[in-house]
Length: 100
Ligand code: SF4
Ligand code: SF4
Image 1 (cartoon, protein in one colour):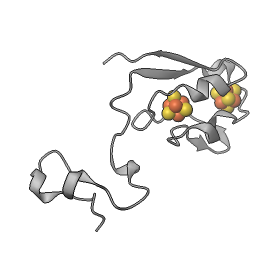
Image 2: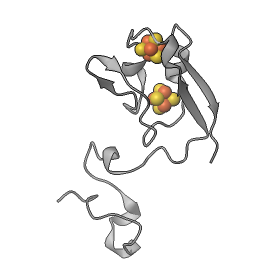
Image 3: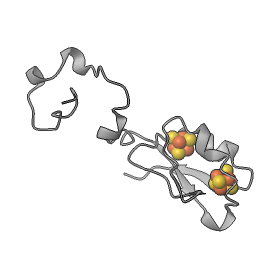
Image 4: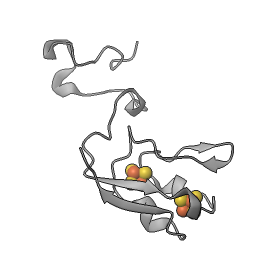
């Protein structure tokens, strides 16, 4: 069992690692790490040319590719950094203020 498998909102702080440290790699998929985002990208599918330039620059791998085409954002993990919007040459990604 990974050290993060049992971490949830119901466990006591004494049951987790010191400082809540996570020792394994690749564990972001276990958590919704995008919930502190203040900006959010909007995908404008009509403008997208499927060049896939945006996908590899996302530091959080939050732009999924399905059947060779980019899909909508993974908002559970997108941090709203805006890199994808800067990279897109076709204006298919615009950044907006996150509404909570
Ligand atoms: S805003 Fe940043 S984190 Fe979100 S999808 Fe774009 S590049 Fe990835
Ligand atoms: S960079 Fe823009 S046009 Fe290219 S796949 Fe991403 S959203 Fe679509």
